[in-house]
Image (tube, rainbow, N blue to C red; front, side, top):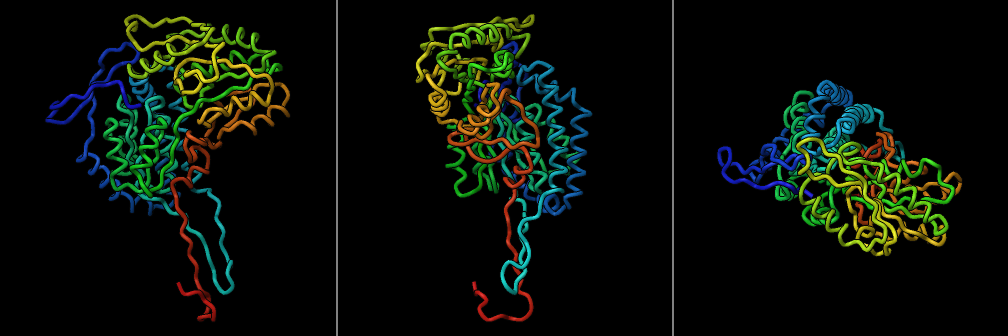
Length: 471
């Protein structure tokens, strides 16, 4: 998904650079380096050199430094917001909330690393004392997408750093701004080499994966995730590979269901892996659901309520999927770009209905401000439709019957399920995919173990005992 810019050879002392564009206007906004073998090798070497000092620090010391980084983020919130808007075109309210979440994440993991529960220890074998040490994996290569450049970096980097790893992070080609700012503040708060940013393109990402890093944490497309696994070999990977989230709307859904789904589907212009994408309702409720969702979606205005798509390639992909749809109902909202923004990557909120179950807008992750509506003759059939795609990241159920809602939340194949809400997340709750949506855990104290490995230590007590196993 690292698209939307053009490589420039020979600029700035021979370094390869890429043109950056403003997604709100479609115009150039500067250039950014494309890191290659020398830059990747230097960053990994610096991270390896910084590892003993960072991993050897006490959890309290690491916590203090991570807390200092959170403070720097808060003190520079306006700069982070401006950088995030430059690369993504998001409205100020969205970026402000995301910057606040990032500072909270670093504070959360600063404390979580100190409060982790102890694993099994004690005299588990007669005549021996054993315990388990949780140690950092080492140098972690992190690759993050363009839809949440800062937030996804924090989801990956904060637990990795709290667990004692050093990190080399590659932002998406179109959105290098905020990760560069974060790396600069990390150098002040955490020390040189602990968290570095390597701007670049897909080739840069492949170089990071093939470099001597101990683990790769990747967030992006399914195809790119499969490539990461092939290149990483036996090294650990943590993958979040997108979603195509169903929303099961039952006839007794709360009155605010349709507005809530429209807001969630258009937040960040729908460029969220966990965003609602496929509304599934019962045949008896289908016409009413289509009518209410049409009103809610067309009330959302691009340029007023949400921002543009990120880059030209993503906009073209979105247009191809919409054009290939066999939908009988196609309801489109309004566009209201600001002055001078008419050539940006704006796409209106859209609702498609009366379409076959194998329509491309259903089987593929559209990643735009679009909702599809499907009908099912029974609740069981609705669950089957929900689970009919390979992605299994998130889902929601909408009903005033709590028992039914909890039952269906357990039956949909998703790593995260909501009842009468969608996209409600916090640092304390884990997030992760199943199936082709990847594996691994973001958020919560469970994410710390993504970036740690156990070492069992057993000591024989007293003299040698008959029957001691000789390795």
